[in-house]
Length: 411
Image (cartoon, rainbow, N blue to C red; front, side, top):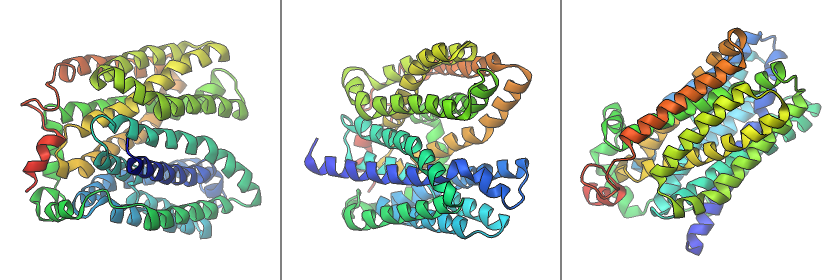
């Protein structure tokens, strides 16, 4: 790995970490902030929904625009949107402005998909998973540190974390403007602008779902996201109702999971992909996650829970990185941003539907039903992976698109 690539990856790591740190500063405090304006529990729940719907719509559009005009300009637009959204939240005097800030952040977001597209541009097949792993590591660190910082700052007012988040995002903006180069060369950007495929078209995006290698991997991303979000979004409620954990102890357990995930994605993923084929890691990861999620639903105490959480964090960290890495190797060059945006939308869709499903299962069926459903989804995903992915030809095979084939096709 060259010094220039290491520098670019370090910059992207810093960008994603600061972005997630700012976001996680305000996320746990939004219910309290909205309650100050008289919001009911149902209305507070809609705050996260409108932000997710905004991302669901915008991510493929922003990704596609980055294919046409470059990653850096769209990253700048996305960060400016984040700064504006946090400032709106900090200065909000009405519930309407609180909602408006979340909608703006969702519609002008897409930072994660853009960061993944950037890394795809600057890495080769050998270094791809290692590079993408740093995004997962930055995510984990941001979500570990952010809530604690937000809780500390909230003693000075619920709007203070929003202003700090805006300041962190502004620092991100300056760093991108000064230090982060464009990942697509000027000549290639010129080709992209004249290529009809890079114009936003729902038809071109949906074509990805019909491709023999890309479509199945996108579906696996969706299945994995639904199963893991069922666990993630409902864990705090499970810990409270089933194990009787206080909020502080639940936070410690989640920190443990976050640290394991950071270690896997930040350090172990490169060694694993050097030794094993990525599609084999996907297949094995789905099986491990299926078994671990079922065991999680039956964990009777905290100590057994900690044992079960280790393979969950391990397999989730692997899948989160390797599914994206494998997908990028079968995408046409001019479709990278749009397709990764589509993958991001699938993940967001899971985040919209999973909390409600999990809540109903916990209320009417108990913890085991939640673990069983998540496990069943992953077991089905393992069978689907074996049928649709394991026996596909390699990246240079005749039935799959790949980045090496895409370059001469972009003229």
